[in-house]
Length: 64
Image 1 (cartoon, rainbow, N blue to C red):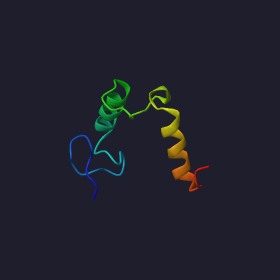
Image 2 (image 1 turned 90 degrees about the vertical axis):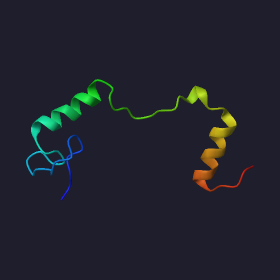
Image 3 (image 1 turned 180 degrees about the vertical axis):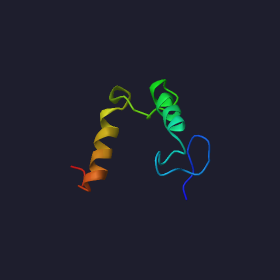
């Protein structure tokens, strides 16, 4: 059985993965207010050589 990510009580089928609609709304509010955030990297902070090296590593193509 999974646990509610907000309060750690057992999750309910109605509000899964949360235990209640209240915990679901608490979690949503955390996203809206910036309590949770997805990390991002600005492309301006990465130099071109690093970006090209990462692309080559993903493509598995030999450097030219």
